[in-house]
Length: 513
RNA sequence: GGUCCCAUCGUCUAGCCCGGCCUAGGACACCAGGUUUUCAUCCUGGCGACAGGGGUUCAAAUCCCCUUGGGAUCACCA
Image (cartoon, rainbow, N blue to C red; front, side):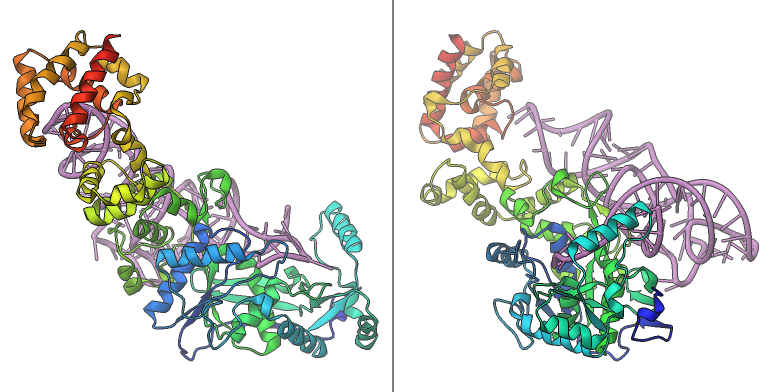
């Protein structure tokens, strides 16, 4: 069938240009996640950039839930996504939970509206019912595949008599509704990429409404962006090829076009779209590991955007004050977990002891080292614990295993094989422990002053002709059971004199046996 | 494979739009020193890139073209 003859509308070849309205309206941007999984860090970055753009321009940031896939959408994921955004500090002005003037903000609550728009589109000739079965479509695709042709709908139903088609629909025959793509080409204006040109030959007569009456993504997106008065659509690059379909729909609807910007993809270390295969992709994963929130925000910003090329560490306020969609990088960014961890450490080290203690406490409790109450009562003690480890950890989650020794019984400190081997390298390790304990006991009755004890202990070791490692390594084994860790005398202060003396004694015995 | 997008150190990027200030800057990682009882932090230094080829120009990382390479996408999923 002649392709052109299949079109009832419009027959004139034309070029449509998706240029945004030149009149400046108040900015309205949106983040429209699908609640079919946890919030992806790529999605989080998209949200962040949209939010920053809205804040920068005094506009509104709208949150919309695209739950038109009933198979995979769940309320749990929706809640998780909202929580994730809130955790990042991204606040929305309108959304499913708080409502707003242009709701509903959940697509599943708008089906009647979509249906009405589809009906109007059929009436105006911009869309048509299609009765082709899945089997026929599959066969068609297989055939096109075998001939190495483009896999597009052959528009069998595009030429059907509208009245006849309407009767078949009325009689209950299963049908999808397809958009009738006119000949011509579309130029999409993208603020990140410039003009992107698509020939309509490449755009399929795509399905707007499924045979069960539910609307599809490309259809809902445009309806909603129109309903919600969205002025700027910033989303991931994977949506770039959808844009001509959507642009055509705006035009069919006679609605003003938003301005587009397609963000570069976040890639895994394999250079492909970030997926679970190459590492953690959910925002939640990083929160659970104890990455400081500010570090996550900062790092996400750096995937495709830079403050000035020199500053690496910056605040959300600086982001908001300086963010411009035009400055966003075009090329995809490989996600570097190593740098992410470094940045986490940078933020963690900037925190006050009080803040750091608050952030770490839940991780210590979750690890089962002690109860929240036990941690809260000796608050000063826990602040000291946190102080000794602050330079040594990059995330809150790294603290518990490092301080586990503090919560072990004095006669049952867990000894790592490596630490035992290191201590045993020194000939008289057990004896050193006994001697040191004997020397130490009368000196720590009034508590432990780490600084003073450090000097005195080193002097003691030197007097006995002990090399420092021969002294420190057995002691560290006895007190902590590991080879590396915080300053030994800080550790003693944390442990307290009774525990220190007890551990030295048990340590000597264990080492001797 | 078709269509579309992209291309500066291993990685994130500045510079590119509005050619000269670029002997290409910063950061992570890496390497070497320093501080230190270990680890970590911290300090100093080093290594390291304009994918290739044509053009335009007095001058190109910056503009144009081609090649190569990478990616995205081709559903009654979003």
